[in-house]
Length: 236
Image 1 (cartoon, one colour):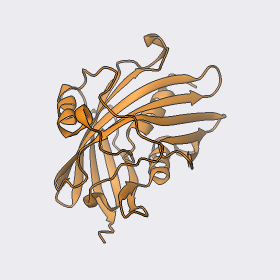
Image 2 (cartoon, rainbow, N blue to C red):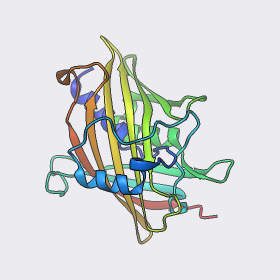
Image 3 (cartoon, helix red, strand yellow):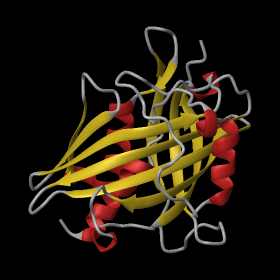
Image 4 (spheres, one colour):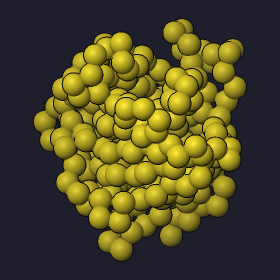
């Protein structure tokens, strides 16, 4: 697969609003995430994030409840919209689980952003039934992208005005030739802004385990501005 399409696939996964986590202690807590946010893009591994257990989900604040239209804008080094990139528009939704906790609808959200980016090149997004931290995206030409969350942290879901989430994922692109590995960290600061949710999302790519820098997108950093506008809200 050509490298530009690989970049799009990586962007698709890092832009997912369906991050999953439970609160991480120590450096992965709120103060640590805020400090790490300010030091972007000077991030290095290992990230100060706890490895999630098999069934751990991110519990979102109640003000995420419902369905939203997301507009994602790539920002340049000055923090302004990049004139070379068109905004990406897609939908996401957040639902209550059996414990009445608010979580992201991962398959729906991944498929939504994937279709917006890649159209009919994306065939399906599958959630591992035994592992909330793992998804498989299948593409045309017998290509598959395997994404596993290997580190997470977030601030308290009881926050009333803002919320930080951070996740480190291992991506394996299966297709013609040898598998291609990358590790990508995405740290997002969400804030309530009227009826909308505004977010500043920052990301850095790291080399996959055992790979040389020139085989990956090592050191690639990106920043996005997200605006979530309510569509069908369920505040009950």
